[in-house]
Amino acid sequence: MRVLVVEDEVRLAQTIRRGLELEGFVVQLAHTGADGLWAATEDSFDVIVLDIMLPELSGYEVLRRLRARDVATPVLMLTAKDGDYEQADALDLGADDYLTKPFSFVVLIARLRALVRRRAPQQPVLLSSGDLALDPARRTVRRGEAVLTLTPREFGLLEFLLRHKGFALTKSEILRNVWDAHYDGPENVVEVYVGYLRKKIDVPFGRTSIETLRGVGYRLVDPAGTGEGQVQDESGSAPG
Ligand code: CA
Image 1: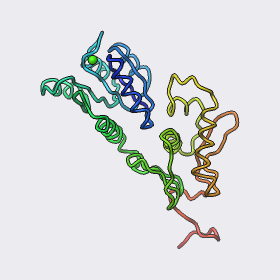
Image 2 (image 1 turned 180 degrees about the vertical axis):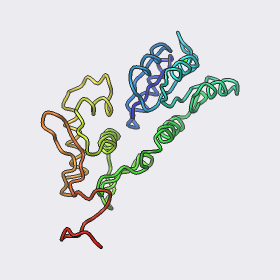
Image 3 (image 1 turned 135 degrees about the vertical axis):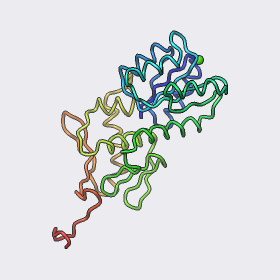
Image 4 (image 1 turned 135 degrees about the horizontal axis):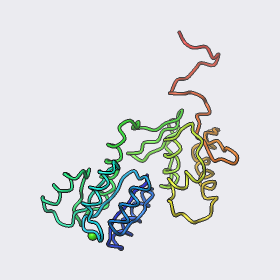
């Protein structure tokens, strides 16, 4: 999940980034209202954290212009005091939620996840392919009855693959969505993590659900071909 954090207090912004990254979010920071507006308009995010008191353009103004440009990305506003006036303003302008500083990190993460879920009601609660199932809210992964333990990055990678099940994904698409737009580490990091993931979700179960598409990238498939949980009997004949 990609999050844009627009916050001019650099230390607070970096603390938020570190915390969100530990939870597997991909975070981009902007330190002025103008930069935040630009980033939110030019790029796509799953959710935006927007401070109100910002240089150049206030958070209110950023939000007003975003909605005027039909950018519907959910916005959580950070208000500096718990004045009803500010919160009512934020909601009037089309903010989806607000949090008063200082806030608890656990609450921030829960609110962000809730906003993303609310935004995407068409997304199934459970992402699955055959007997592989990932629960984005509970942060759990199962293969059949086996509960698998994934790191936040592995989880983010599997979630992205499952959300685009059956589609070829390039390494750069994966990098952009699971790492971040400014990632400048080794390019083979995607291969490395696909390798880690295979060792957890496939190898122990004798499966090959992540296909390598030479020169392109990867595709998550259901190798058993069981489709939407339908299982044919061994003769291949359909029941009834
Ligand atoms: Ca501020």
